[in-house]
Structures are given as structure tokens and as C-alpha cells.
Length: 378
Image (tube, rainbow, N blue to C red; front, side, top):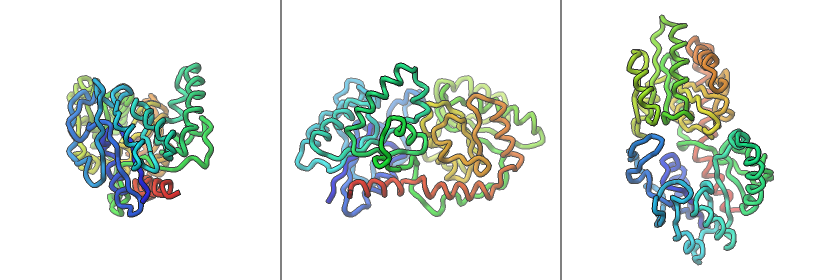
């Protein structure tokens, strides 16, 4: 039986369905190595600025190993993950035949990559970097980083790209196409019940995310107010779901307008009901939003979607004129226009449903699991 290990910083709630799908394979034994226990136990999220404990099980249905972390300040940052147990696991006679590393930004990840390479373990990298983010860096840093990554990436047998923007990053570094394997960024496995819901009309808008300048919840509120001025006759609504440094100003703004609702932080179990109560989701982030999983969740619940032209998932999940639209980052007028086109029925609700369902057949964890099975059996 082929042995496969996946190294992650901690049990990640969105990856649980993938890990469970991998555990179902009869000829491949998969073990998830976790550097921290965040998510399974309460942890402080610096962006949400609160202690979080997910209300779903994140360590059930698959085989996982919690590695001892000797970092003085455990976190998901570079020096927050120091797990010497990785050394013995990779030197052992029972070491995995293949190791998939989720990123490289930690002491433990770099340790694992080096030892796996020395021991002849097949190495695959899954990272979120997009070309857009990379080219936003200062010129000197960008040139130096490209040289270093070009050498570093020679250690890997292959790369798992998440979508179009991520693939363009690997093209930019110079990775050959035969080393690139599609592993979609997503939140769930495929189900025929996905996108069963069909919208009747679009009136209720939604923002879900951390309330930080990167996410720009303020611009959603500004555009929504402009939309309300244009359509005073309609019962429009906008709900802001999230928490973070911008909470005081966002909550105050929402409290002063009856058409705005401030929900605050929502745990995983709440989100499905929230999506079902709305018609369209908006993600106006800058280029640091390397994907945007809330868009996956929204589309799976039948919603239309609008993103800025810097959100990583836009070229994969947003099909202008079919299930949503894309606006220029920071442009309130364009965002208002996109929202207006949804409200006035420019997009067919049947087209939204059909498009979302077709995307769900591609962007699901069963596709990612199949990719990993193929690599491990190669």
C-alpha cells in the first residue's frame, strides 16, 4: 500500500472533506500531519481579534497525527511551527512514499522538505500565491524572490495549483506544465444537492469575512447606500458577517441604517443558514485575497457573486453575465453598477443556477482527491 502524508499548520476546517475523501481510498494510506492543534481547540485569531472554537468536528473521519510543537509562541507563522518529530517520521523505515506540503512558510515545513528530498520521498507543493500578489511586491524584492524560488522549487516533483491565478504564478517562476496538477481550492465534496436553490429575485446582499482593510467591507456599505438611493422603492438589504479591527466603525454605520444588518462573527454551523437567507455575496478585497473561499460557499448555496478584479478566485468562479460580475478594486461606482445589474434582473436567475452547478462539478474536493490518488500511484 502506498503511504502518503500531508503536512499542514493545523486542522483546517475547509480541508476536512478532502482528508475524508482521501481516507476512503483502499490502496493509499493517507495521514495528515498537523503542526498545531488550532481549530480543534480554542485559539486566538489575530484578524478576528477573538478566541475561536469551530462548532464542527475538524479531526474526525481521517487519520491525523498531532506533532509536538516546541515553539515558545505556537502560531501559524514561520517560527510558530517547530516540530522536530517530523525528522524521525521521515527518517523512519515507515516514512511516506509521498509528502504533500501545504505551503513552505514555517521552520517545520522547510525541515520536512529538506529531509524528504534527501530520503527520496516524492515531494509535492500546494501553495496559494498568485501572480498578481507576486507582481505587487517592490521590484528588487520581486527579482530576488523569483531567483530564490526558481532554485527552491527544483526540490519538488510537482505542484498542486488551485486555480488560474495560482497557475500563472508557477508559469511566471518557470515551472514546466507537466509538473503542474490541478487541485481546486474549495470547501466541500460534490453533491447533487449543490445549487438546488434557485433565486427568484436579488434583493439581499451579503458580505462575509474578517473586518480588515484588506477585505474592504466599507466599500460594500458605500456602494449599497448608493444603490438604495437609486431604488428607494425596493426592499433592499445588506448583512455584514465578520469581526476584526474595523468592527467599531462598521457596527456603528450599520446601527444607523435600517437596511443594514451587522451580524458579527458567525461560526461554521451558522453560515449555511446565512447564505440561504441572501441572494448575492460580495468580496471586494485587494490582491492579498489569494482566493476567497466565501465565494465557493456562496455559489454552492445558489447565490450570485461580485468580486473586485484583484480577488484570486475571480477568473475561476465569477462568470460575468452568467453568475455575477467583477469590478475595479476600490471603485464604488462600478460596484454599485454591478449590484444594480443584479437587482434589475440583467442576469437570468436560471443562468445563475446553471453556472453555479457547472462550477460545483469542477471545484470540489473529489477532484482534488483524484489528483492526489493519481500522483501517489504514479
